[in-house]
Image 1 (cartoon, helix red, strand yellow):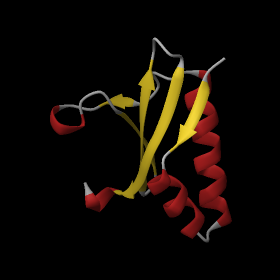
Image 2 (cartoon, rainbow, N blue to C red):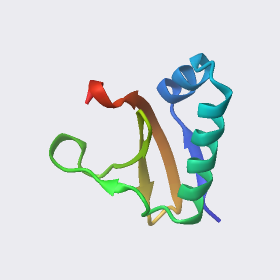
Image 3 (cartoon, helix red, strand yellow):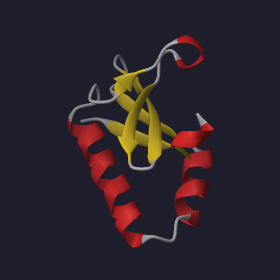
Image 4 (cartoon, rainbow, N blue to C red):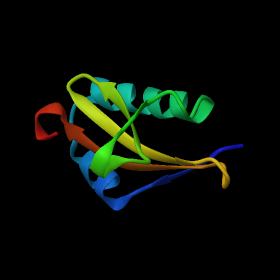
Length: 82
């Protein structure tokens, strides 16, 4: 079983989202990540070791620790902030 940890930045930004539809999309993507942690696009350079999933118009950034069987949801940010 995969355990999920949420960073403070993610929980703060998630709590500020007012659109219910967007929140449900994010929750659905988190469930998909728990089913298959390698579903996201692997990042390079500065963000090496993390993965991202696209949730229009946001990006969900997470890190998968394979040896610990743990996922850490790092951040959600707008595509333009990349």
